[in-house]
Image (cartoon, rainbow, N blue to C red; front, top):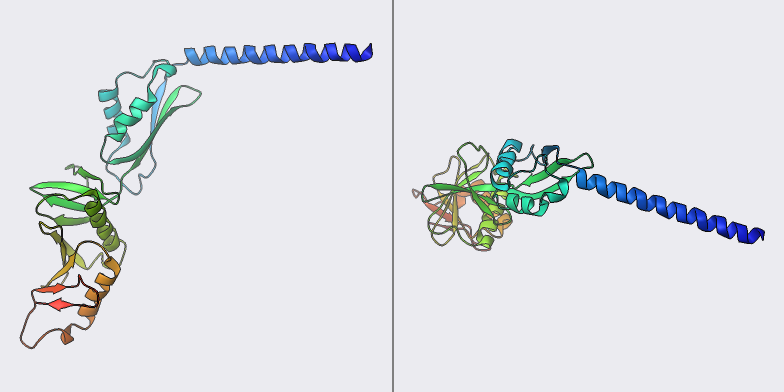
Length: 246
């Protein structure tokens, strides 16, 4: 008899617990349906590293191209479409839009990090390490290498290699020595060194470490390369184990 009573009590408590859970879930769902967007907070996760876009710029994009979201039920706000809209902006690398329980819309943004500024046909473009490029706005200011170019902008692979060249220079002791970069219609790179009149020919922007080692060797022991009374116009360091002076 006692065992039967315990079973009945256990069953009754279980039913009450489940009923309470369902009631709570129903209440939470009802509250979620009634919850409206009460504000917008934007975070630039890398603001100390890049400064190509501001929180105000992002809000302008959302307000202009997405449409209304304030005082709109959070379940009706298409966060995926909002993220796709931001993804179209060339200077943004990643983005996440989400709501917190208080109805505030949060947008977290990471900017791209370009290393080279390519001048082509009078226009300026930033080139990132992923091979992505986006136009330079007049109000942006960035201490990166400028590359004077001719011909096409090249493939993603070419742009990626050029960006790695810019990164290599900017994050090494060459930063204060390389004063100019140029590329020809074949995408081959040459550079000028501060205080030198020669052009240093790199070829394609690959195998950078040994090429710059050859430049160092020429600069450190230049007398052995220069014939008496002759001034070289170019120094080609493109090929392994060769320094070709002309």
